[in-house]
Length: 322
Ligand SMILES: *[C@@H]1O[C@H](CO)[C@@H](O)[C@H](O)[C@H]1NC(C)=O
View 1 (cartoon, rainbow, N blue to C red):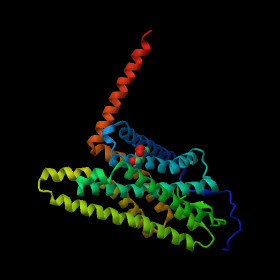
View 2: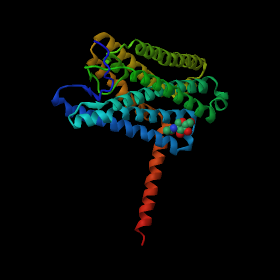
View 3: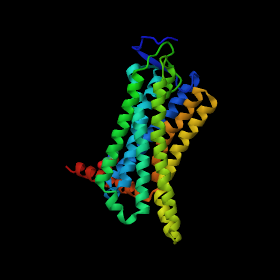
View 4: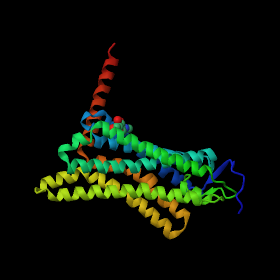
């Protein structure tokens, strides 16, 4: 296979999750519902946090940012897949594919940053409760979010520029439902050594670095919870970080699971199916984990809807008057 000069190919074929024509309506329905639930559920969290001044704390700002990132992340992949199923087409343009890579890497990276920041926030809240307000002030929180955004933007820019260097020959079929970075690198017919290296180094640095940070924070949290003498105090301290711990473990367990499955089967189709877990299911579950376990979020939503119905009634009454 010689490196073709034909880098100006017009597009790729996204093979999707299944070739079976009869399964397409089912896949469409399932992904459409998961997408709508993700957008709606995460919007509710953003609404609850921004409408309620009790929730204007770093912990909930981070949560709202995570919800925002989840909406953006699923929006880079699922709508295109749904359109393709609906129009019976598998085509994605070269530009479309590169932008999917760029945005999915950007939002996935930001997701990792936010999870690590949330662990740090809980660490400060539980291990240094007296200094919490001083350490995690709104300025620092905003700054950390900004820095994490810039870092993931740089990572995404680097990865996308590396993909732009690749040349593609005849094999333009992507066995996935979106243009995933790793699949694209495997598809290229030019030398991908540099791409692989950059990809693995960034995965090890980012995911590994955050994992170490998260483990450190939680080991400190657990040892300081164990030092609390009263059972009630223990429960209270634990419950503030239980939902976050479930999100982090869900996120890392699915990514690890997908990695193990892809390593053991060697089938890119199986790994595409497995990656549905962290690309679609995790962002969908986040709002449920937080809102079902969290009294503050529930309370904020109930107050919001009460206010909305009262305002709605007032508007109706005012309008009805001549
Ligand atoms: C993200 O965090 C910043 C800084 O704390 C906050 O001002 C902003 O409202 C948050 N974004 C969303 C979508 O909630």
